[in-house]
Amino acid sequence: MPSEEFESAAASFKRIGQDAVTHARRVAGNAVARSRRHHSENVELLKRSGRGAKSGDPTPGGLRAAAERFRRARGLAIPVPDPADSVPSRSQSPARTPRTSDEDEDFSQMRIMKRDG
Image (cartoon, rainbow, N blue to C red; front, side, top):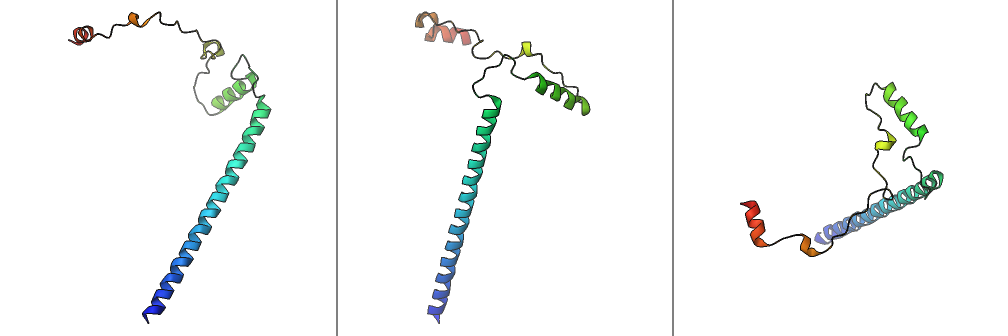
């Protein structure tokens, strides 16, 4: 009778393996479908937002007003920042001044030891 147990175990192992492969394929298919759906949604959002269009105000007035109404309706006392106080865009940020040479900074051992001690 050991051969029947072996055949039963082998059949069970094969069935479990097939179930695992089927499950993995289903999960992978769902992930691919979800990824494609998100990609197409992102493409649509980019089209609606005017991809590449530069605006002076990072938050349009309509969105700002909706945010204020949302806060007021819920009793949230969160101040709405002034657009003028916002972080400047990369095109508006000040340019870094380049170093004139490596001699501007002294990394000598004596100076470092004196500073720490």
